[in-house]
Length: 529
Image (spheres, one colour):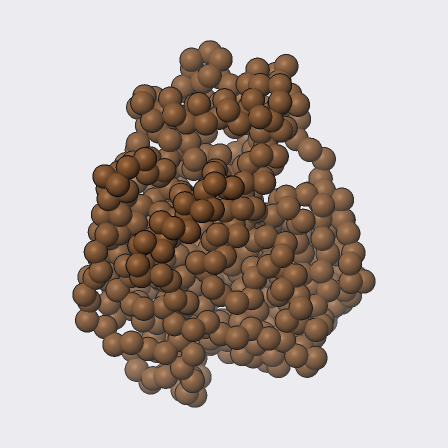
């Protein structure tokens, strides 16, 4: 699940001629990739970090990788990469390459490389070449998947994600059937090869193209699953590995989404309780029960009359889903909600949606790759009755996100390529120490799944933060960052069971000075899987 939640699913099975390919197919050795030819990064309209990237001396290049690793001499695709070079020489205290990935699936890693380089302490940053990449199908990589016109498909207000009748359900089903059909028509040659195993193999091709025997890796959210698969396939090529906000190891995404629904319900209730504690400011109810009632009443009102003509119930879901990833936005969202309810002013709510929920062409590209990867990684129910039964059951206990999350993923029920068997993630004692960072109440990557991944890697040590932030390093928690920096510098890992306190709870007026969420926080905190 990603930030633009509340999309719809498809209705009829699709018939697209593709050749099934085993997800676990054995890769054959092929021609070594050419070394990256680094050059200036191309300008991109609206790139907020272009000036920062230029200041840091970012360079850009490409790496060619096989479309199908069973046919390494066959068709190739192109991955976009960037690099912020270390300041120290190779024969000095240079620590090699640190590859970074923000998750998704479908998120671009090149902005994250710039943000990590700008945020890490100098004594670490200047000793690593920090490298970001756009995974296959994403961003500046070629081809970049684009299945629909985002201005049409995401045009607000979208249908209510909670279907109150079979007719409403059929509208939602037909939307994503159309989405899956369009992706199949455009990319039938690509879809069989869109899976996490191939992304991990691409990562190793990038390693080879950089001329490195081993790499260090920092992955957030779904990026931790890429890291886990890479460590399983290439344990001897791992130097250091950080997994921040750790995905469960089994790659069974349908079941993972149901666990997300329950975890997001807890976070949403935490937000309602926080809003109630500050009732003098927001006047939305002095108990969590009353604020929850007010929230669902607002949602019903928006179904009848969308705020500003654009924020309907699904857009309202989108905005408040962001609050499940980070409590930094709670004051802003509570204030916008209060202004709408208490003053009849829709402008702050519309502004919040435009900032946190509105989808553009980059989001549609990310959504296409998200579906292509998750639908291919593992098997999904093909009978919609199974989905309806499971969502109806979970909705009774997790009302907030169950149906929006279902519709976001439901195209997998109709995807033109069947899901395969995920890589069996497992670590060995041959791996170096691995650092895992996890918040106790993370909704997008629940704690129970992180524990399962830790159990797969005998060399892993986990630092647990007491809050619910998704993506806990390099966003202000000094305790977490202290462990991260120590590990990146010399491989030092803390004792198993190390705890860090959560950052201070937000205050009602924090949103007045917080400004827009940073691109780093957006990538690591609201593009989760």
